[in-house]
Image (cartoon, rainbow, N blue to C red; front, top):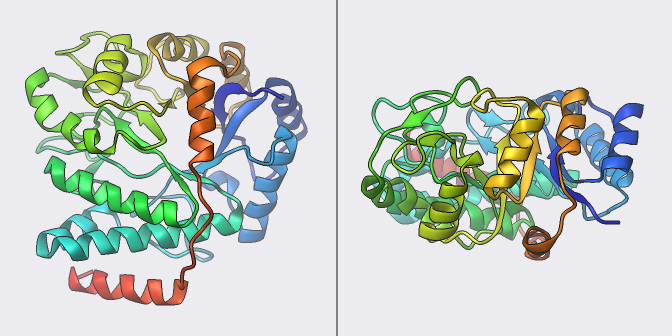
Amino acid sequence: MQSRAFITGIFGTTVNADERAFIAAERPWGFILFKRNIETPAQVASLVDELKTCAGRSDAPVFIDQEGGRVQRLGPPHWPVYPPGSLFGALYDMDPAIGLKAATLSARLIAADLSELGISVDCLPLADVPVAGADAVIGNRAYGTEPAKVAAIARAVTRGLEEGGILPVLKHIPGHGRATADSHLRLPTVDTSEDELEKTDFAAFRPLSDLPMAMTAHVVFSALDPVHPATTSATIISQVIRGVIGFQGLLMSDDVSMNALSGSIAERTKASFLAGCDMVLHCNGNFEEMREVAAETPELSGNALQRAEQALASRGAPQPFDRVAGRAELEALMNRAGT
């Protein structure tokens, strides 16, 4: 049964009757979990199984934002606290090999947590490059302020996820680091020149262009498109994301319910597809909004279908890993950074 080109959240810790009927009728490609969906390991594993059963696809991808630091949907008492991205940057400044090792270890441990639950995709790594005066929404989630360093650590994070059988999602392409507003709340505008963006923001994403999936930034880059944020800008998607950066994988929007986007949920969904997104993401579990997204979402076909299939096919089996030893080694490395 062919899927439709959207990823949806649900409201609670189980799939209710309306959601079950919606999933069966509207056929989302995948699902995303948030803290509201999470209680215990057994409950999450059951929910993941239930979502896949409702979809009628054992390979239906289940996404989560499990970065560490401030953005961690799984947490105590059932799951460990993981360090923010900035810690890997601090270790990298002491010794690049140590910073990369810590980034890989943290991601590998996260992958082990996710794999046990049946979650198959982590919305990680970030390649955003923050600057002085930018909004704190990225802040210490970032790996650093130098594009080459950010790309190197992002690659190490990717390696850890992939070794654990978890697919990565590169975000927030083509860059959220300069935004002076939180795109959850309002639309940020970046007035930096195209030349400077290519040397900094875009440069961090270019070495990661082979990743299977990426998530757009709800950010206006006025030098390229003074009206539309990247998510709904055909110019930015074609010329920058697919062109300058060279990303050819599955391109998904960030959450279309975020306040950075204007218009109805249906209008935002339609605009994302018209601009060139392969997949639309809707996160908040609001059932009426879910229906609006589905009404404007096409069948998954053509290049989008090919990219989706290639992304799923790139997922390997988890490699052998000693979690106890890995945790001890990561803690030792964190101590070197004074955490």
